[in-house]
Image 1 (tube, rainbow over the protein chains, first blue to last red):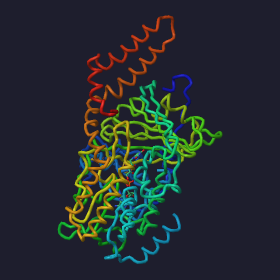
Image 2 (image 1 turned 30 degrees about the horizontal axis):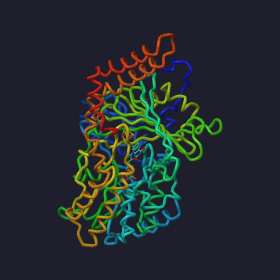
Image 3 (image 1 turned 90 degrees about the vertical axis):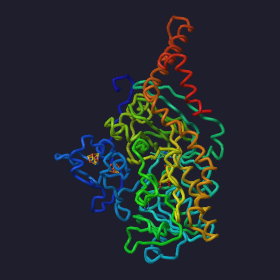
Image 4 (image 1 turned 60 degrees about the horizontal axis):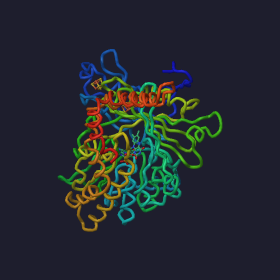
Length: 103
Length: 454
Ligand SMILES: Cc1cc2nc3c(=O)[nH]c(=O)nc-3n(C[C@H](O)[C@H](O)[C@H](O)COP(=O)(O)OP(=O)(O)OC[C@H]3O[C@@H](n4cnc5c(N)ncnc54)[C@H](O)[C@@H]3O)c2cc1C
Ligand code: SF4
Ligand code: SF4
């Protein structure tokens, strides 16, 4: 696209820098999990990975995703996206997690 | 956090036993929740408003433009934290390197009340709105998550929270928890929405550290005027069903993409990548160049429309706002804030009436559902109920073929060469007609979509 003349280059922050813009308070425990790891091991679509805007879900070696819960923006997409209903999704306790100022 | 909220918080946290103290508990201090709390408090009910975030709005994300026709009737917006009013709406079709757009900017929008459309930040606005409910007499607790409902038989008689001894009884519960409605779903008051009916949105707020008046100059603004730019087509969100947006705030712009979760999953199209592609589209990049990211955020939008609205009234409880699926998202309109406030208001009013008659049963609270049906909320949702499905059937035509066809037609119509204009006009016409399946195809299409604008 940027091959077109007279189009400015947009430099985007990395995911890490983007997430750094969000105030975050670690609850200490993951508020996300999978219900049955075997279901993930057999799942080939990994929809949780595709839909997550914060790179929380990452394909793991054994087929069960790693969950970097500290990245979570609490958007709830993974919960709706998993067609096996295999996502455990709870709210971080006592208001922990993200705080948006410009949401 | 403002002084008033801090004070209230402390008082409430020091006295953890609220049983019998409250007539109504509202779950979630978003727009719908605070509207309900305010309405009930003004009618002298004792209201507890529970919010999981560190302050109201801390967890909330939207585009966005706050639509104020109802909220303006409930509170004085004079001191509300508004960013800009919308003076221009622009709808733009993007192919991979073309843009065809319409801009609408009536003089009327520049005069009060500015067509009731203002950009806001939810972190600021929701906190302010909750304060209005507190000033009317409601009690607010933050950093408290409702984890379930208390029942006696069929009747809902209160909530359970994540606080120690955190059960709170009250005759009425208003579920205003937004799209991620864990409480309502957990209590079987509504089904989990299917991913075909939920959109994922990623958004960035950008500032322009280099130069003066960058936003005013790029978007042709003066004073408090602002714009909302809406983009659809392949260049906006690839093959997905959805769109991109740019809204101007005071000193920043909000840019984002929103599209169906189903498409994000099936196309393996993560929101962050989609946002990056949209921002670097050749017609979008000049508006956003040399910017710095102030905040990144994400959220889901329920877009199942009228068919997805659950039973709104239960014994001892009602559902309002996004939790009830009250969002209109059809490409031309993205409206949820107005519906959230309207629904919260009617719910609050009906509960106050029922309370005066000593009734908590679903039959008595059904008046809320009826009020909503008679309001613009359900009427608008029903009006566009057909659209989602039709657009899905025509997806390729609308999002891929049409943006290119219109751009080609424009290029032909205005071509500068030595042929007579009649030739250009003919070719322009053919570009559109051929792409859309001939005259017959065009007529069918026009008929199918006429209801969007008529
Ligand atoms: C990206 C995006 C763009 C949008 N753009 C627009 C737009 O431009 N214009 C427009 O009109 N609408 C827009 N919408 C829709 C609009 O934001 C929503 O319709 C509106 O916010 C709904 O208000 P609500 O009060 O029902 O829910 P929310 O605003 O989601 O509020 C729910 C509240 O409940 C709290 N909560 C949730 N669960 C619990 C719990 N268990 N315990 C305690 N508290 C809880 C949350 O923290 C939150 O404060 C957009 C939405 C998105 C996602
Ligand atoms: S959470 Fe769902 S989508 Fe993700 S790997 Fe497991 S089964 Fe698949
Ligand atoms: S809630 Fe959103 S950000 Fe958090 S893990 Fe799920 S998809 Fe990712």
